[in-house]
Length: 85
Image 1: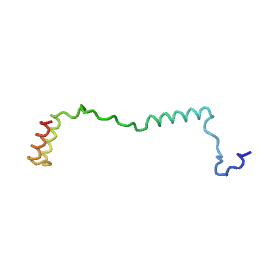
Image 2 (image 1 turned 90 degrees about the horizontal axis):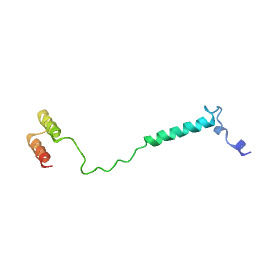
Image 3 (image 1 turned 90 degrees about the vertical axis):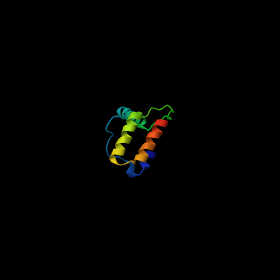
Image 4 (image 1 turned 180 degrees about the vertical axis):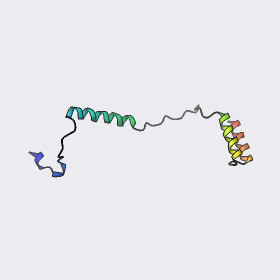
């Protein structure tokens, strides 16, 4: 009777909240949820990935120039880089 020799701390003074069949089904559902929520590795980015439209980037650069975050030289360099790509 090996089960009689386990330490007192392992004994739980309450019964399972479900019968064993329901508990097993609940455990499986938790495992499925866990596996579906795990981080999936990102697919490698393709070289033809679509980014923001050049018009939107130019509008953002104009807004940064108006706000004083860019100097006119930095703004022109960014516009030239945008047009060359």
